[in-house]
Image: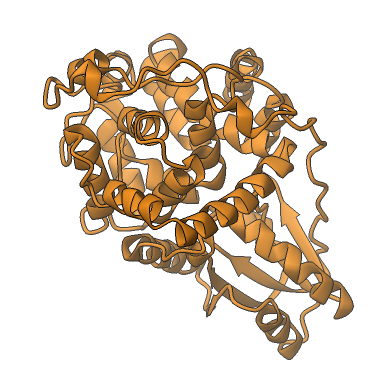
Length: 406
């Protein structure tokens, strides 16, 4: 996939334009069908570009509306807004991400102690479980960096309930290999399948459903898959943590000499956002390796590098390339250039935000402000992402009217 879809905005826009005829009823009718590697024509395949902001959710919704109207494009619009919902939900419950990170550390430690469990995880990750569909999806993920969304749900359900493997280790497997790997969508998607997101409502992989929506490429027997009776409630006996206010941010100060920080968390930096700023230097920061304590797949790193290079080129800037290693490295670059402000698009909850939290005390100690800006699109969605998707779905007509007026 990385060769067929280079990590540039130009290629993302090309894919979006080619998908325009299928954004309406054809998407709604065909989106659940997984036809296998190289045959995912009913879906857009834009997710790696959307994930990094090479193409934005707002752009995709605007194009779908213009081509098909709100009714025909309803399902595509909902699916795009689901991503914003998950982002906002995790922003409002940041301790869920912290719990995932801590729990994954514990699960990986358990693999070190339990050789039998480690062997079962290895068999699952290398596609050697004997469950034909599951094994094919594991290989497709590792080989291509992509899985159809329906296959992701089936895979996660089989991992959790049939193979009885730790859900966080499965989420980590996805996160290390998916080109569109996103902390919120990945973590909450796995929690949803496990019955932790929508409490007591796990997602069950069903043999007939798999056969139907793979056009009978796979025909598992019902006895191959576990009967899912309840979710993993036992892992969170106290229920969900309370909703928190959105994290406050410092707006950039135009007159302060600044370092522009570019990461693949958001590669759509509007030149207008930085035109009024005194940008003295730019750092292109690699962060994909922060996704996991385990090695992150090479194709993820290559896609990230391409996205960063494309962003800097489109802005007409020259950037210093850095890995997110010790935060002191970033401080050192700013101080060397006598820059007292770092500016970047808003960084959502996830491993890069965790890294920045470690950097903040160093920035403060050296008199460096850390400033961000949030997208208006996110600010329309996130305040409503406090419970299930329904609260956000009710806002869709308002969101579409706002787009129409702007």
